[in-house]
Amino acid sequence: MLYLLITVLIVLVYVLTRFYLLKQEVKSAARQLNQLNDNKTAKKIHISYLDKDFEELAKEINNQIDLTKKVKAEKRATENELKQAISHISHDIRTPMTSILGYIQFLESDEISPEMRKEYIKTIKHGAERLKILLEDFFELSIIDQVDYPLKMERVTINDLVLEVLLGFYEEFNKSNLEPTIDIPKSDIIMLVDPSAVKRVIENLVLNAIRYSSGDITIQLKKRDRSIQLKISNSVHSFSEQDAIHMFDRFYKADQTRMGKGTGLGLPIAKGLMEKMNGSITAELKEQELMMKCEWDIKNETIKE
Image 1 (cartoon, rainbow, N blue to C red):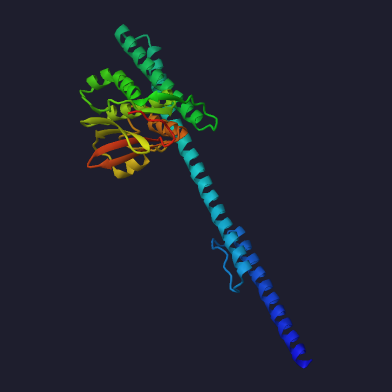
Image 2 (image 1 turned 90 degrees about the horizontal axis):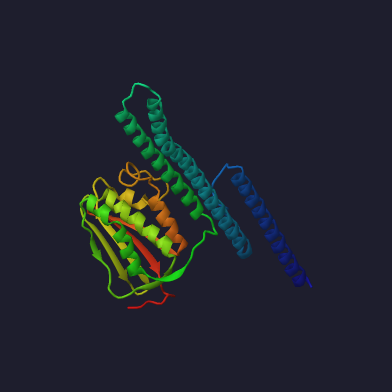
């Protein structure tokens, strides 16, 4: 009887001790969470008393803390991108608008010659056209972001599509004294894409290559085991690895990709369209040669060769 009483007493002490320690641990976790919520600390929850269930609870709480930190970081990044976007939009619109208003003031003068008046009108038209293209690109970029962006997927021969786009740049190549090296398979490569979107992607990449090439341009279409790759390469000057990493980011300013010619939105538009078609677009810089690669996953597509 005494043995039983001692056993019960030991069990009771154990249970009460365990209950006390768990309660203290709950209080400690609550304090840590309060400090975290009040931004007094950024540390995750840690526990002193080892208990399997409580350890699992602390683990899930810490997972939630990590998720919350990630969401906050993404929110800050989005806010910063929006601020940059507003800044760049304001600057890019203001520049041609200021030019247009300035030349309109010149036109109001009665002292300018007919030749100068004609030249000023030409400059105003050029500025207005640039502003129109800029606004259209801004609009297209915002539309691509929408979840329900319309795509008309159909089976097309990608070889013919690439050649069709390149043919449209014949005059551009001539004006720039460029003779591209074109490597496209003769056998048909058929894939499911939106032909209009693919054309826009290729046009933007080729136009970028023509504008900023310091020499050669190479266009290469290849079929891999599970993908189709389109590579457009051109030599560049004053271009860094950092520029290659960020050149498809919105409103990223690099000398080669954002300043001077064009609106600077062609590459982000190309990236957005590729993502809508479940494809990818990347850039790589090697020995002052910039290589931009479009890749479509075709594991579920029919390929003819």
